[in-house]
Every structure is written in C-alpha cells, then in structure tokens.
Image (cartoon, rainbow, N blue to C red; front, side, top):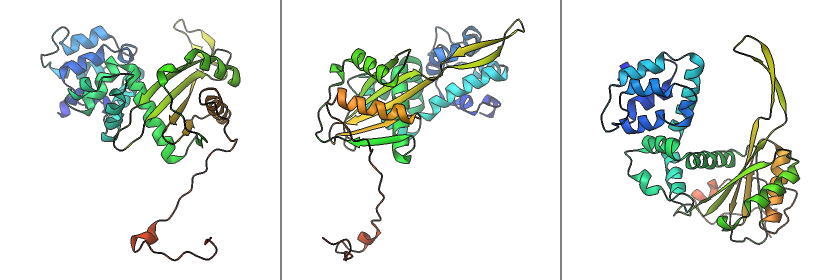
Length: 301
C-alpha cells in the first residue's frame, strides 16, 4: 500500500487507499475537487468513468495527484482533510444523527455504506448541505466544550420551535439590520433530532460578509492589480427547547451578542440578559467515598 502514497498529501493518500471505486469516482466529480484539478485527467487516470463497480488501478491516479502543482495539491488536500475529519467515531455519530432528521432523511442511505469514511465522502460529494451541517454541529460542540468564542443564555420560559415555520426572509432582514450588514446575510436552519443521550436541538447558521479588504494580485499577463472583497464570516446558534438554552459561537463578539439577543426577541419572544451564563466547575471528588459529606458552616443555609 506504500505505493499509493502521495507526497505532502497524507489525507488524499488515505482516501486513495481506503475508499472504494464508486466513492472515489463520486469525489472526483464533486465541485470541491473540480476547482482544483482537471476532472477529465483524474477520471482518465482512474479509468472508471461509467463503470464504478470495477476496481481500478489506483497507481496512475496516485501519479496524477503526485504530479499536480503544489498549490493545486494543497487545495485537494484541504478538501480531503474535511472528509477525513468527519470519519472519526464521534463525528460519524453526529453525521448519522443529523442525516436521520426531518431536514435530510438520509440515514438509511448512509448506513448502507461500508464505514465512516465512505459515509463522509458520500455526503461531501452528494449532500453538501448535510456535510456542512455536520461540520457546523461539530464546531459548535468544540466551542461549547472549550468555551472559546462562545456564549450561552437561558430563557425564562422555554418554548417549542418548529424549524419549518421559521420566516427565514424576515429573520435575515432583521439580523442584517441589527448587525448593519450592507450585503445582507444567508441563514440556514436544521434540526438535530433527539437521541437516547442527547436532546433535540435547532441549529441556525448565519453567513455574512466581513469588513471590506483590498489585496494586490499578480495577473496572468504579469500585471499587478488589486481586488476588493468581503471575507466570509459566520455565526452558529443552537437552541435546545427542552431546557430553553440558547448558545452562539462566532469570532466577532459584537455580532455574536446582537444576533443571539435578536433571535431570542424575534423568534422566542423573550428578552435576554446582557450577561451570558458563566461556566462553573465543581469538584465532585468528595462524593467518591460517601454521599453524606460535611458542609462547611459558611455554605450551610
């Protein structure tokens, strides 16, 4: 299997070694890979177009990727890394959970695949919204666990929330106005179904353009030019109706605070405190020996 190694591309090497022919073919036809490589050249190297059931000779395909210019291989490797990240056991559980929800109903399609890596590659190629939703849910979980660029609020009166009944256009206009977004924003919502270990969650992603930036470019005719653009930014909100908890993560503190307060007032009809919840850590070590512990007088009621 060492013959299939692509230098400077360990994640692409993993896909090349471990994916079956049909999954590999689907990846080569996906937009992420088409941006980086010539699909015709890759498909010719795979020698499997129109016959995905046939196991191809992967060495020519390895050679195709190995001969790519470094900058193109970097783009391919970046896409491959996104796929392999969703192949961990923890990510796979989240993947199946979201796929089984009302927004996708694809769990049976994924469960029929041979493993987590194949499921990740399938969603990457065939269900990009599902793939992005899993990435966002994992990102929210990571920020929740590490309390980075994250805040949480509890509502006074938890209410049920039907994702399908949300007026996305109205919410988008309200958030754009509150955040002062000249180019507006794009909102996507999904429902994370409840499981034996987790409760129902509603996840709302808000994508928008950041502050204008200008950079110099080197053009094909060797001219130096300039482009002005807005880098993409994103906020992710999560609402758990069972406990009335709203969470939001995003690197822009002001946008984060304004968005979560607007979501609470416009969608849940409740005004939030200006102060988010503060994390507290408790030492439960004394309970390992006995549940009957002595309470210090300073803490006794």
